[in-house]
Each structure stands twice: as structure tokens, then as C-alpha cells.
Image: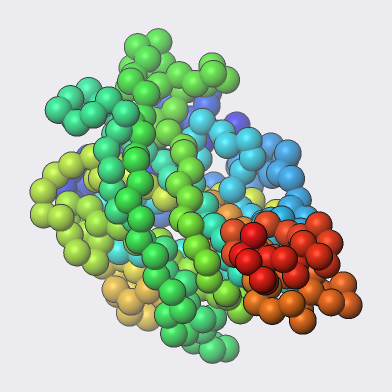
Length: 327
Ligand SMILES: [Ca+2]
């Protein structure tokens, strides 16, 4: 099985890719990186899709996945898109949720970090904190390249763990060796946004953060965020559906990265085709509506509502009690 990842090596314009399970190579590819992501579909073994637990979507259940493209268990690394390397401001996809629960309680995004602590020894050993934004949009109208109106935007600061230090026994001597004995240039980890947001059946989401010279508000200084990428699942979701098949939504300020070379616009957060089943590794978890009055508890209604924290009720009395005293 091969794993690849994006990586930036200079402030702009130069990047490399590499990282594979059975002999790592690092070679300058420029724009071919993007093609690399597309070509990769089909290479990824089915193991990525294995062992993903289908979340229960029955009403009244505890919060469960209504869309899931995060591989479980999480592999040491995944293909990824580097925002600094690919002049990216925002990256996401159009998706349709499974089941009927539509009150989002959390959204998990798999990231891939290529930065080593030894490169930034003055920063804490545990990692560095970086704000990352999740934007939720209405699905775009039929035929539209851009999403609809913004539904919600949440920004949280996350601890970004360092990629493990290089193992000299890995080919090239720059990759790290994981527990599976394979060598990787990036390190996959999950971040989780906490939400309380009702969403429609289909949305477009985007993940945004700033790097040295990219993002909506470039930081203007080098730092480990230049080696921070959003992970990609080349197999598509196991819960919910990709409602933008063969496409992602992407804002890159370099038109040549889009499949159409920028003919449909450079810079807006818009559809880009030619991605096959590849989609960002993101998981949406939702719960039933919150019980707001005792009336909703009757006639088995307690099974279709939940507490604000997403937990379900044991019975009608439990539900009525919650509407009375919040417990
Ligand atoms: Ca898609």
C-alpha cells in the first residue's frame, strides 16, 4: 500500500511529495502533485474503508455519524493537501447526510502534519496551537460552481502534534517509521470541532486556516503551519454520500491547480472536477432535536428528541423531567 502526501518546502512555489509504505521517495513535481492526488484513486487499498463502524442513525439514539470519511482505525498517514504548497485558502466538498438526525454535535477532520519539532525547537514538545475554521454552506443551486449561503462558521484553536522525527533506516533518511514498520513523511491526526448546529440534508463544507502566504489572512512569517495539510480519503465516505461526485470545493489562488486551469475562476471557493472518489477525511456527528417542552415527550416522542448535549432519554418521564429542570 502506498501513501502520499503534500508538502511545501519553500515559502511559495516549490513543493515536493513523497511518503510511501514500501520505500519512500521525495521528488519535485510541481503541478503534478495535483494530478498525483487524482491518480492515486484506486491505488489506496480497501483497508482504508475497513473497520469503520456504521453509526446508529435511529432517532433518539446517542449522537452518531451522519457522514463519515475518516478511516478507522486511523492509519499513520493519509494523502493530503498542503495549504501553503497549493496556494489554498479553503478546501472541502459537497455532501449529503445519512439518517434523519440533523443537529450537529461535532465535526472531526483528519489533518496530516509534516513539521518536526527539531525544526522548531523553541516551540513546545507537545506541538503548537493553530486556529482552524470550519465553514458550513447551503448546497449550491443546480449547475452552480459555488456553494449557497453560509450557514455557520466555527473557529477553534487546536494543538497540532509534531510529526515523529526521522528514522535513518527509512529510505532517504527523512521519513519516520510507524508501528506498522512502514515509513511516512506525514503524521495523520484528528481534530474535532464542537457544534450545536442544525443543518439541511445536503451541505457544502470548507476547512480554512492561514499559513505563511496563504489562507484568507496570511500570517506573513514562516512557521510549522506551512507543513500542515488536510488529509484525503481516496475511497469516499462510508456513511452519507458525496453529493459532488468527482469534484471537491477548493479555493486556490493558483489557477493552474484547478482541473480547468482556472478557466472557471481562480480564488473563489468553488467546485473542481477530476477528483474521482477522493474527498477530505471528515466526519459529521449529529443528534436528534433538543426536547423543549413536555408535549414533545408524549406518544413516544421522547425517542425522537435529545438533551442539548446530544444524549437520549430512557423513557417519557426522563424526557419530561428534562424539559422541567434541564436534567
Ligand atoms: Ca466530492
